[in-house]
Length: 565
Image 1 (cartoon, rainbow, N blue to C red):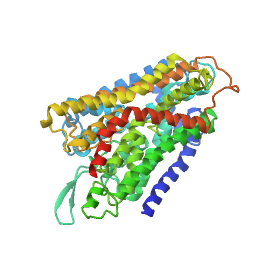
Image 2 (cartoon, helix red, strand yellow):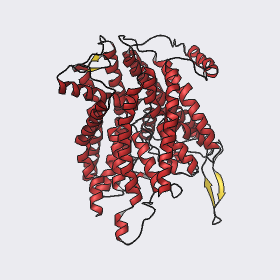
Image 3 (tube, one colour):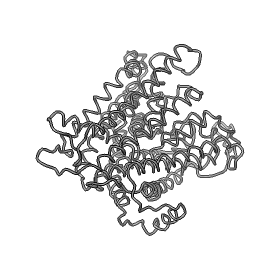
Image 4 (cartoon, rainbow, N blue to C red):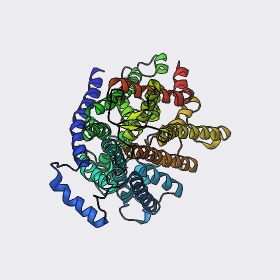
């Protein structure tokens, strides 16, 4: 048991040790300062901009940034739909996988377009190698880069005193993909490939089992796809069971590598903010608030997974190794709980165990990680979500002391607060309304066959699905039969709204604030880089999550937990 906990602590410490210098490097990249990789990447970057006719030095206002972001996403969507619905007739399909149905292609294209990677298909049978590379892997790079570029726009608004020009979106996007995501993914892919993850375009391999039977084992260019799915907080598995598959996650070492990748860039993005703004203390306060929330979820989940299922213990069966149903014996209950929380506090969505098999309280912690959606979060968009809570906390603090709220030298007024509240309330609205409709449909038609588990756990499966979609996460309680027109279309709509409005909102607020007159700090200015303000932000997050989600959690995992006794 002590060894398992030590492994978790080591993973987090190594992640933090790598994230700080990576954050400093990222800040230099976005500030266009000299880095040691410039001789290699500068010529490639120039080729991209010359071929596209884009001037990376042209400054954009916040509206132009959003137009650019939404336009390229619109193009990527139709490209993905085209390939997925025609993959059976295209090359690189040695296993003869069929075309996707329109509703499944819609859900898959939207899911990977919005960096969610919610999979209503099994990777090795649902996609050809061409689809895995030119749709899935391509979108995993560019959608992560999109979120990071949007975050840098907000960084600029916080950094520059008075301006409507917030840099160039295409410049930040290309730098994110080329200079940050690509090197991290390349190193990770090499480590995975040399430790057992397949990297080939050959079809299924014939294997002889220990019992002497012959079986066909799917393979493919998995190592490269796994590297970007983890480092870009994407999460879509090359194989159907994701990183619980022995070829996608062959050993404890690869498990550590993949787990580090899940948190690496989201944490590095926080420190990049500190270096970018020359406000390292503010970065540490944000990191402290996020880490406090993360550790509260993590310690609870690890405790209940290692404790085991009391219902089984009552029957006289000891669970000294924890709750191991649906877990990898190679990694243990603690490592599965650690992965379950890291992947849900970010928008990653990969799994190394079946979340549907976790104990009820552990499942609740995973849902809370996605419901708060602000403890580290996805690459780029994690900070954008947290930025909304900063704005709310500043406004509430200003009301408490009877002073006009200010953040980074700009007054926060009614327009910004309306946008912030719409974004903050959108998340619970999408989750709860979607779950309510699905529960009502199932109540009227229980023979529809969505749920393999009745009662509290069945409700949890539906709640988790919409929570995962709204948080752009992608993991699921897979006792749910989700490859149906209802789930494909309804979660697809949630994915669209939950991705773009939470990006549009923070960028709009930052752009509006950046155009306002800068007010120098005075004795009465609210300090946002103090522990007191950090506590205020955490309280705002906790109260909003409790008011919005605890009633639903009571009907799901909490009700299931108490029913066990």
